[in-house]
Every structure is written in structure tokens, then in C-alpha cells.
Image 1 (cartoon, helix red, strand yellow):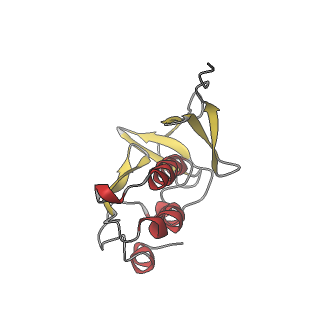
Image 2 (cartoon, helix red, strand yellow; image 1 turned 90 degrees about the horizontal axis):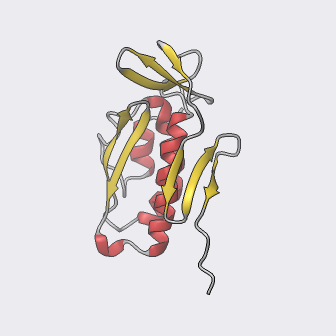
Length: 158
């Protein structure tokens, strides 16, 4: 299992020690997947993690970079990777990193966890989570570990 120290060592150009103090250890492997794509793309851009932590059972993730460094390609890749990271977190146990994970509610606390680490009452979702993108709406396909377009606007025909 990946540790925060592993990530700091692998991606020193985009991370500072302490960035992952609020990220559950079970999610560090999906953060590593994210940085395998994002770190080379964002090297020398001032890319920096601003917020990283568990919020309502999912990974709350925000970053910043120099405005002038953002190209259309970087925006497209980061938008996709941000959505993948977010939706992967809901399907990955925050304790051990196993999949599948499910939502669990204990009092006012929500968490994503496998059957072994779930605490409280399992939350049954009415359907898959959908995210809006510039090109339409996507959902996470856990079996393919990828995003699937579920709706995109029709092109105007003149």
C-alpha cells in the first residue's frame, strides 16, 4: 500500500510534506494513480494541492497553479483526472484501499469502506454518481476503472 511519504518522494515537484495529513491511507493508491498522469503534465507550472481530505465519504480535492500555465490540454486532462479521483474515492475503502467500497453512515459521519471496515448502516444509493463535464455528463464504471459518457449535447446542425 502506498504511503504519504512514498508520494512526497515520487512527486516532489508538485507536493509538499503535509499535503496528505487528512487523506485516509486507503485512498493513497488512487492519489498515486492521479499523480502518475498529472505530475508530468503539471511539472514547472506551480501546481499545488490546496485541499485534500475526506468529506462525507469522498475525497475533497482542490489544487492551484499559475494561471498562465494552463493550456486547453492541461484543463482537459485535469478535469478528467479530478473527476476520476473523486468518483474512485467513493468506490475505494478509505481504510485499506480495497474495492468495492460502499457508503456507510454512523451517526452524522459518512465513509466509503469495504464490507470489513464499514461502520454503521450501509447506505444504498439510488443509482450511479454522475458528474458534469464540458462535454456532457459522465459516470464512473468501476469494472473498467474509467469514466463513461452518459449524455452529451447534440451538435448544432446548420
